[in-house]
Length: 452
Image (tube, rainbow, N blue to C red; front, side, top):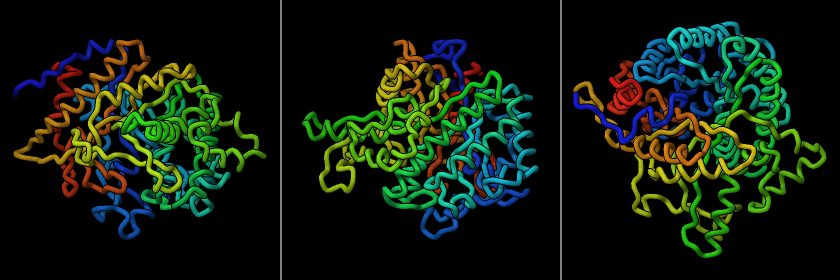
C-alpha cells in the first residue's frame, strides 16, 4: 500500500501531545431501551415525524453498547491514546433523578476497564445533549431544578468511576444544545424562542460550574474541562455595520459560554439583548456561581463564519454569508474548510488570562464516502486533517497552550438531525450489517501516530 505521507510528524507536536478520538453515547451506543435505560429527549425527538432528515432513529446506531471492545481495538490500531466518550444520563438514572440503574453503572465500568486494559486513557463527558425525558417533562434546561438534578447525576458518576478516571469533561457544546434545542427548535427537545433559550443558557452555566465543583471536591487529582463549540468570526466587509454584526455574532457563538465561566459575566456590551438574562436572574445573584477554574477548555471547531448585518433577521439582526455562496471549499454539509479558522479561534481563546490550557476535543469532516472493494478512499478528509492539524501545530509553535487533538469521530454514526446522511468517521460502518472498515483517513492516522 502506498504510504500516506503527512506534511508533519507526530514528533513535531511533542511527546506530551494528546492524540484521541471522540464519540457520544446517543450517537453510538444504541440499546436505547435495554437493561433499564430510560428515554432521553433525543429518543422522543427522533420519534417525531420530519425531525430527522433521513427519517431514521438511533435505536441501534453503531451498536457500541455491544461492540465497544472491537471499536476500542480499532482506536488502538490507529495509534490513539485517548478515548473520549459520554455517559448517557438516562442509562444511569432512568428518570433523571432518584433510583440508580445498576446495569447502566455496570456498562460504563466494563467500558472503562476495557479502555484501561488496552492502554487507552478515558476522558468522560458527563453531558452530551441527551437529557432524560422525565426531566424535560418538568421543564428541562429551562427549569432551575435541572441544576440540582445534574449535580446529583454527576456525583453518582464520580463516586462510581472517580477512582479509575481522572479526566472529566463536564458538558459538550452547551451553546449547541441550548441554541439548537431551546431557541431554533431543530434539535431535541424542539423548543423555539428566546423565552426558552435564555433560561436554558443560564441553567446550563449554573449546572456546569456546580458539577465541576463536585468533581473537584470528590476526585483527588481530577483534571476537569468543558468543551465549547466555537467558530472564528469574520465580517463580510470592512464596513462598520458588518464589523459590528461580526462582534455581535462572536459574543453569541464564542463568548456566551466562555466569559461567564471566567468570571467576566455575559458579553452584554456586544450583544445587549443578553441583558434580559441579567434582569431575569438579578434577584438570584447567580453571577459568581457561573464561574469555575477549569484545568482546560475543549475547543470544538469545524468551520469559520462570515457575518454581515441583516436588519430583516429577527432578534439578532445579523446573518451568515454561506460558504457555498462565497465559492470556498466545503464539506458535504456545506461547512467551510479553513485551517485559518482553527488557528484564529485557538488564538482568540488563548488570549484570555483565565485560559491556561486548550485541547481540541472535536474536529473532523463529513464527506460522501463510498465503500469500494473493501476500501474508502477519502482523500478529501485526509487533506482536511492535514490542514487543520497544520493550523494546530502553527498555534502550538507560536506558544498557544494547545496540547491535544481528538478527532471527531471514530466511526460513522447517528449525526443528530442529519441522521445517517453525514459520515464523519475514520471507520466506515455499514448500518445494516455493522461491518467496520477503516477508511484511508484512519490508515493515515495510523501511519502518522505509529509509523505503520
